[in-house]
Image (cartoon, rainbow, N blue to C red; front, side):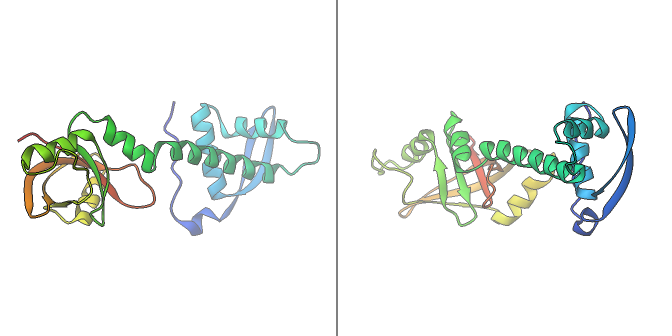
Length: 204
């Protein structure tokens, strides 16, 4: 299967109409659509391992007589994108971040740009308790402060570079006036509404 076509970010280009003549079934059809819709129809064809003409033929076969094919193709494209968005939404978000953190057997947490601990696992609390002997055994993540030895925005940009992999950075955890220093591997958290990282604490 070929890689699905990418949607260009140039909005002026995306809304330019383009007339194309394609083979649809046994006939050739001339259709005018905005470039953005042609690109999405190509994505659909790539995923289905067929031609854009085949996609159009399938869409046309569902139409009632006299219905507008161009409008139906726009609906087909938007429906595909909506389905892709729904699938992505199930894989990203706060619950997805918590699931990633809780699935880690090592001390792990999620940190937002405003230095808020968004999620942490029992191993993280155990890590903090083991290094601060005066800490109560029923301590939770509340009151725990965490900072990195790199600007958060700089770390985010570094992690967004394709193929960069996890970034190893230093951290400081503060509870009251006590401090814990160490290193962690950071990855981007699967979150849309704000930037966040998931940190996996490395053994000393």
